[in-house]
Length: 559
Ligand code: TEU
Image (cartoon, rainbow, N blue to C red; front, side, top):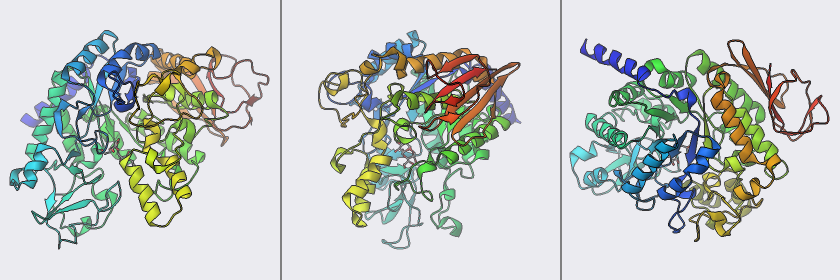
């Protein structure tokens, strides 16, 4: 009875106290390390973001998501947190952060923090105490007996390569790490751990943040007993969308139910349509929205990303449509995106960054920003930043890319072939310094950036703004405004209209208002008869023929 009452209260609060609707949000992801360096040490920082708030305001976004800024040894660029209550000195300090919040408020920009709660750094105090032999803290993680010192408890593999268990000789036990050995998985089955997590979340809410992105949050429900035979084999289903995941997320939500205006987005690794709709359905009080990755895994081969393969556009389209339709029907809410800090730049991946730089950047922006859901723009895409195109493995920084490269070399792949694949798929592609201007290091910093960007096509904000007709930034401004001010795009229904394989066509409808979004996904001219003369957005001017779409043309018609 008491439980029920509490639940009701949660729901009501969840709906009423949120003044800004999730449907109004246009989120901008900032890869903090690479956005703007204010103290010229080569690493982006919090004060750098403060300096660029006016830029973000001008772009039109109303929420920023900062990749992890907490204390961390940076094995995985902050996704290995050693203290959740402290800012890493690399990025500044608490005062800088509170200033950022204050300033952002003035610009009506909300701040979302990246919470990594599936694992901690092995330099976290909890883990250190566990290693010292304290049982209480061993129960914060998954320390298990193997069958022998060469034989881990299960055959699970780490997502960054190798086994997911690390042996600790001193304890004669293994601990679980779904990512690198420096990232130990935390035991959510343990009530004390969950309490610590609630404390962390509430600490940041009390300091004024408006929301969270929860890293790989659908991996946190793991089995209690690893000796069970069915968990022995390596199968992602052993730890993805686990048995207690919805309960855990509801409890998490309950831990801050009395606080206002908190937005949450879950990162869902290899999830499924049904669980996703439960996570993001507003009646369930779990999360506001979520990322799924199926539309991007279209250049994988049998689930393997490290292959030389062009994206399959048919599959890309099919996945987006499938997710749009299912989540619409089941009241899920998708966080739409094409790039983030783990992905190659979408202009290089799906478009043509050399010959149709403006056209393909704007076509793909039109495609995802007007879908049903909340758009997440990744820093740099609004000026068309491209992949890195490195010449040597030494130019890469990412742990996952380096592991994969050396695995290839061990498997006797030649260097060129290995480098080609790493260049195509590396997460570093999205981590290049933001190119603000044409000065040395593109105005990102005055000293050597932590990561190299040779910028083969000289993409900078300064260059982009030189030609107003072909400015990607100005196009983003326009489309963001359209998305923000139009109820049809915020709240309308989605219908796909796909007959031609080269085109992505959909409608958004709200009451009697109707828009048709038409995108040519290719670098070819494609036959297409205009359905209306009322065009509200078009990435081409002065068209010669109305019977064709130009390469990467995007048009929004009012019907
Ligand atoms: O990523 C989760 C994740 O599994 C992938 O996006 C992963 O990087 C990719 O599949 C590798 O091929 C999140 C973070 O976004 C990422 O930066 C972290 O490294 C990871 O979790 C661990 O915290």
